[in-house]
Amino acid sequence: FKGTTLIAEQLMPSGEIDEKFPIGSYSCMFRHLNFYTVFIKECDIVAAGLELGDIAMSPLLNPGHSRIVLTWGAKPSDLDSYLTVPHGDPAKDDCVINYKNKKCNTNKVTEVNLDLDATSHDRRGGKPETITLGLETPGKYVFRVSEYKGRDSDGLLESGGVVSYYAEDASEKFFVGRDGYVSGINWFVFYLEGSTGEIKACDRENCPESLCAGGGYKSRSGGSYIC
Image 1 (cartoon, rainbow, N blue to C red):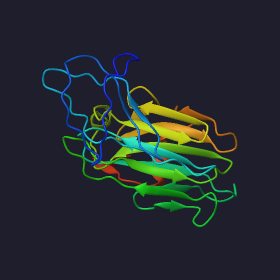
Image 2: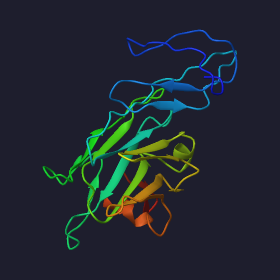
Image 3: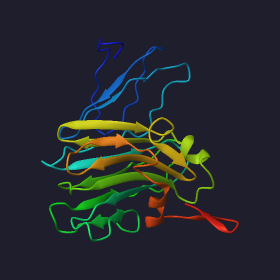
């Protein structure tokens, strides 16, 4: 697209496209049957060309379900997703979805799954990390991203990380460095009220740093751990 004008429409039978277009400012849209449409507002072509790399598309959801998709650029090679899932019984501990624990509320309508754990991004980027949620339990869900074996916040802040949230009647995008907050090797992205479906960017009150004690990689720095 150039503005609202459709410039070209191409089929991608192999999932790839290699076409020539004049230099200029464009937007791109990717559509596939039974998947959510992806729209990239800034899809500009310069003298060196345009390399979009892999485009992450999310399958349509079952009724009452929702999905979290984490994407980022060429570096760092590994970012990890963490989702604190409230237990239906307030007297019991929350469950934390991560690469070591890929299911919560197993075999229940509220089951949560880490569908894909991406570990090897390169110059073209790589596969996304995705978490699919069943019916939401009353309580607070908190989503954060951690750089595996990270040393400081630079890796996250320079990652180009984007978190997309899809539900039946809503979708949200969160961008690292703009939404939520970064502390050490963790990006605290958003929290979700299971009883209402309301989703908001993290702040330190609703997404305390202490949540990272619930699991994940911890880097030792002197006598303490960077969590």
